[in-house]
Image (cartoon, rainbow, N blue to C red):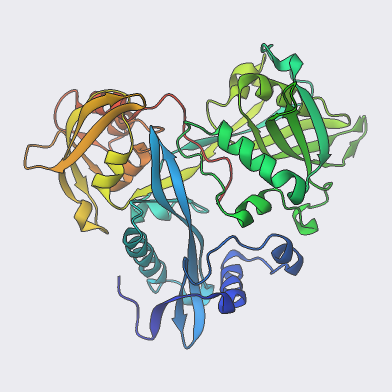
Length: 420
């Protein structure tokens, strides 16, 4: 999309960092917090993946992106994680967001990134650019003392509780996070030193009256870490005594025993009333371990959104859970190279699933859908059959939706445990 007269797309170098952040903060109605920016600066690649719209030598809209090797069913794909998107309120409704998204797509494709992903602050915005919600996330509030079913090996593990410290804990958190996410689509790792440091950073302005960030780590008998929880408690007293709230920034475990030991610990902290966690997979072990699932207050939300930029490459990188041969009629108004008919046919089974070839075809279509719905199904967390029942996918050959649903599905629900 072309920009109005007087506006232009520019790459934002490090020297304009403050201006970039100021434009973004005007969008998000937030004040710049020097202490937080010093302790946890944005993990952006200035002058490389930071872009803005300029008018009269002033930045009036900005965005950035992260480089990810995004986990997808059976593999990984180069992915451009869109972030820090903002248009100043006095420059809205002029097509600046559309122009930035088009520039983001173009630059991502030039870097060889066939997929883009994001977290949507407003769910109504990004579908019109072809992003589909590809994963749900579970938030829960669990009362203190909630009973868990036993898990073999949990009692053999030990827990250490400490104040979170970047120097001592960033590498541990990163190592456990990588190990725990193996095989789960959408589980983005924190690949830059700044991203890893920021995950355990704790500027006082982030505490909102709570204690300094704590970390609970679970260890095997040989001392190796098997899980962690980033924990904050906030003091509160009621008529009957203490009612502290516990908030988990992240709880990650490499296996069932470690998950059981961590949850057992955080659900039994003194003085507390409840434990709140977010960004959990919908199949998180906690949903199976709770003796009384009704005791938890669940909240379902959208997690990571996916946009296919190079359709054929993206669909060939991932693996499929079942053999399939289906012709897709795809619409894509922003990237016409993706539009048209594509044959997706599995050719061989591997240890990670079925391999597929994706080629242009003139054969009659079996399914008709927008690239948005294809992005929603990409990580295996959204059923093509369910989308067809909702009227978002048209089944043109009987049985095609069921076959595609089986192929695109995956044993682990997709999720990203942190908002990038």
